Image (cartoon, rainbow, N blue to C red; front, side, top):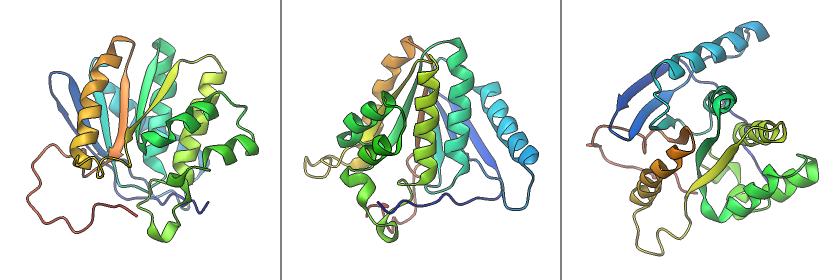
Length: 219
């Protein structure tokens, strides 16, 4: 598979707005990593994680909007999960087709070996060439999945849920509305513990879109 390496973004910006059941974190987590020390890299991740946890009430779905293809946002989600799981079960929802759910579940139960990873990325979603991809098929997302697998292997309770569906269009369902419906249903998972949803920042916006949509990011 032709996976994209994550790019760095600059600067860092986060916007938070709470509703009754959903806490929208439209966050573009951004630090230019080139040329900084490992200590500085660890510091920005810790700072970003802490800033989000300071405003997250743990009783709402935390929706994190990202610019697909960057390396930092998936790293922050992994960091958030590692902190939240210390207090109990966590659910993470990703903008990946439900058709990949079985492979993801199998990888979560695997030893993380190369054969296990190869089985994970054997699905159609991961096989789209980088030139035609929208950034969701990245090494950073694979690193996030591996981080969650390792937390689970160490005894942490984290579930991965997929939000997208390649059948949305065929079923006459608007893709954005379909994912929004699935996010709204994540409220039920809150009874077990915090829920994090990582999706594109266009889908995570809290204000109506008034511009002209040039591309929906599909291959």
